Image 1 (cartoon, one colour):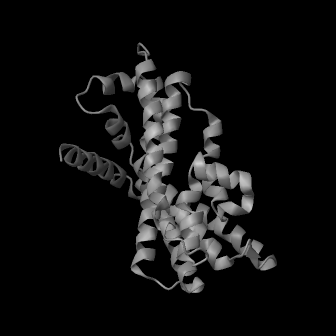
Image 2 (image 1 turned 180 degrees about the horizontal axis):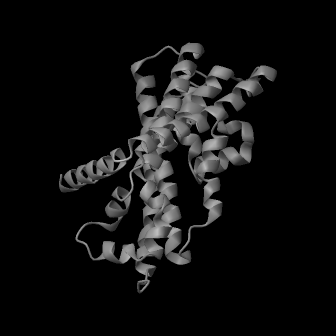
Length: 261
């Protein structure tokens, strides 16, 4: 409960800070909405020429994109501290974090909360609502739970990737740009069902970085393309993905030497 109260305090401070510049906050949120809307238009124009992709219709593809975008937006909003960790290392802030009584992961996690991602989240919700309406999904309790599990598992997976990015900074000072392939890149190719990229990519996204577990398999279950009931629980394995990410972080902490500033 102590960590929860402290996180709430961090959140209040950052909200107060953002509200000092309300126009900037609103414009940034609108910008996030419009950037995602451009991607939506790209999908729309493609389906003006092709009516389906690997058996998925336009509205069903929108569900895939919307869910991935919601997962990424939640992780980016609440785990942004890991994505900007290179600056914490380079300016010596991590030295101060290490001597404080609270856990270092919690402090980095709470150091930056990007509520401007609400614009991107709104875009995802609109697309999801439209996709659901046009896909004629027959909602049952297990499908509602599947969506909840997807959001939880997907947020965990993207948070884990941000955590890997931060852990790499212990060894390189600056984050490695190729990690963007696993974050922003995943958001982009998450526009479509993972299976369309081929068997090898599907295997990679199932057993290495589990994007397929938080998008493709549960979406197939929701759309009745596959009736295997355990598909609804696959997104929860996103939490398991956090374990090796946490292990890499702890290795980085043990490797860390003060920057001396």
